Image (cartoon, rainbow, N blue to C red; front, side, top):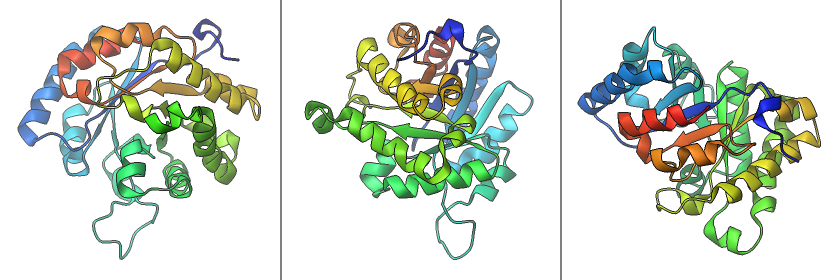
Length: 258
């Protein structure tokens, strides 16, 4: 169902999701550390997704480097009377390349539905930025044996709205919710199984899109387990939470993506 990386042209990708962490000083130090070591990461594409308010600082610090930057969310609205929201045009203004949509925390804590996530995906893609679409199941869903149904439903909301070809301009991140920040990691085999399912589901609609689609794993990825996870045939990199806040940990993970 899945395919070996050797047959494909998928470039490994590691993105840091800083979540609601950081200060001007800590971000300056973190980015200085990442910039200092990034030359040793020739293979993988690397990006950091920062809180909105720090995007100008991140853009300035990373200008001229090989490291891309992105946002953790976006409004589905183009602009107007939406107090506290951030429009895609604002992210474009600061040179964002990536936008995370549908992170499990947005779905669970802020009630973002599959339909809303699909609308956000659409807005990001229409602006020429790259959505990082997060999918994944809770512990209850995994124990109930419905992992594949949940992931399929989350994917179908996007392909139903945008068509499967839209995924050619996107990245998918599989994040088992039960392994985020819990210290529990899906085994490489568990992760690979779902990644292969995702690629297989897309392949049923378009084999070419499926072959080119980068599917990242997120869920307690650390320097110590990254290489084993990334060695799996359908795991093309990672969406990294806590470990992305430490330059050396993050670089170790980036180096593991071959």
